[in-house]
Image 1 (cartoon, rainbow, N blue to C red):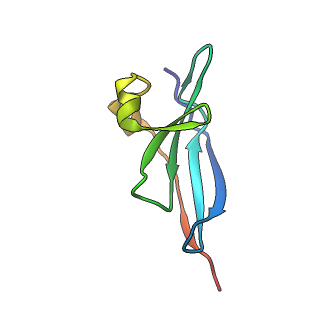
Image 2: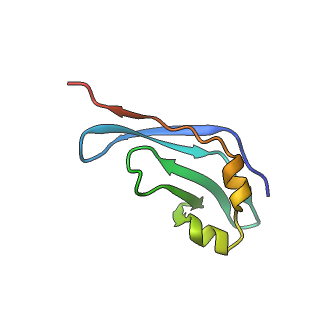
Length: 88
């Protein structure tokens, strides 16, 4: 399994008018038909970490069951995220 270190940020507004930054590592692994990314949303902490399987987000528990990633690999990643409040 290959784990990427590059982080991509995308900004959007949530329902409380916070600017949210979605941070995702570039690549976890890929096979003949799928590409997998590890993604974290910086505004909704309840969502936590997800694996992005192509364009579909799946929970880490499911990713562990599918052997897409291990606990050690999650712990070794340094995922950066930032939450900013929109200024008036």
